[in-house]
Amino acid sequence: MLASLVYCRHRWRQTEMSLADPVRAFGGNWISALALFVYASSLSFSYADMATGVGALLLFGAVQGTMILTGLWFGERLSVRQVGGLLLATAGVVAILSPSTNKAPPLGSAFLMIASGVAWGIYSLRGRGAADPTGDTAGNFLRAAFLSALLSGMLLARQHLDSLGLLYAVISGAITSGMGYAVWYAVLPSLTRSRAASVQLSVPVLASLAGALFVQEPITLRLVLASTAVLGGIAMVVLNRQRAV
Image (cartoon, rainbow, N blue to C red; front, side, top):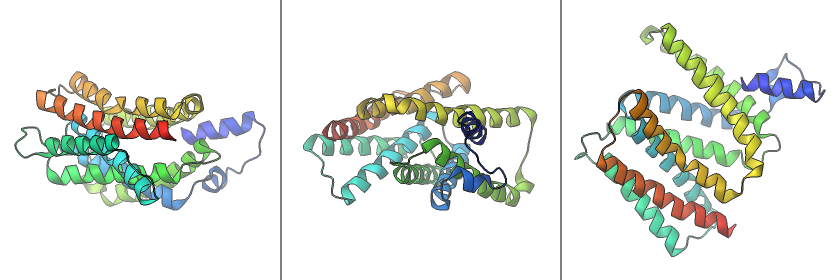
């Protein structure tokens, strides 16, 4: 889907491009593609034993934590409010993973989701300042698709395919991911950094609601409190930092 969108955009702009080597034509690089592959594959395996909302919170927390810690490594400084927010978000993640929680995810799945978030944070950091975000993303997805095909081939004997699963896969890949990235990059220049960060804070909440609506996952008081801690803490760090930029 991303490749088609990029191709149509170039055709509309009457720009010549080679379809014989789409990866080279679309830009991107193998390091970013590897981070994208780790993000997607780790997320896929971790969600086999994890509730939707819990997984989204862990993923989002790992993404923001990676970006925040990277900023600290390169000399950024946190205010007292930001430090408090970071501690609050950490406490929320600990509450989610607590063994006393009936719906706590298995540690293996949780670590995979955190690894997925770290990989996505690395991918996002590497994409900052890209001249053509959509084109670079399309190239990275093409490379990651090649790696995914290799992984799928290795696990072919364990796979079970059905028509409904294939339909969901196409919808997830082409519409919610491919077209979603294109729409996000189209509206991003019109958003301030604070508003963009605020919009991203809604992702785990929407995932929890979708899980309750479509797969009957329960929304417990502990999950609500932990979600509030994670999202509120990250908001204290990210929004305050963005205002300072």
